[in-house]
Image 1 (tube, helix red, strand yellow):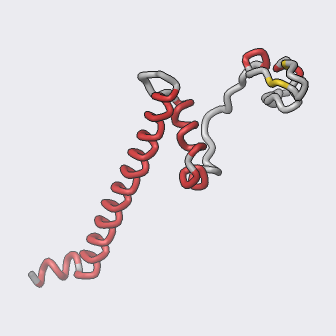
Image 2 (cartoon, rainbow, N blue to C red):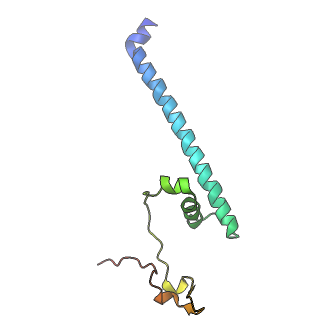
Image 3 (cartoon, helix red, strand yellow):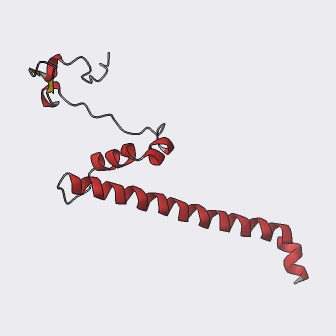
Amino acid sequence: MKLFILLFGTRNLEVNKFMYLKKTLDNRVYELYSNWVLELARNAARDNKKNRIIPRHVLLAVRNDDELGKLLADAADGVLPNIHNVLLPKKIDKGGEKIPAASQPNAYKSPKKS
């Protein structure tokens, strides 16, 4: 036992035990969050009458949930979708006339690379 303490030290064992517990707890938290996101994405897919979860369903799930939206608000990876103006839904103005999607003032346009 004394040789073991001389070689590894009791403090080193305590640090290793702490790091193991921290890693285990982190893994459980990540698993909890991933299950939460997948459940919400599954509900979004079901609302859209789809059997498979696509990245759009995950995005809808995260953005529609207040807590996850705040947690992942600054997370950025990948590319924002470029939706053509023709495919955007048409808005109806106050007079009841449809406004074409191409002439809508808030239509999203991706930045052009020069």
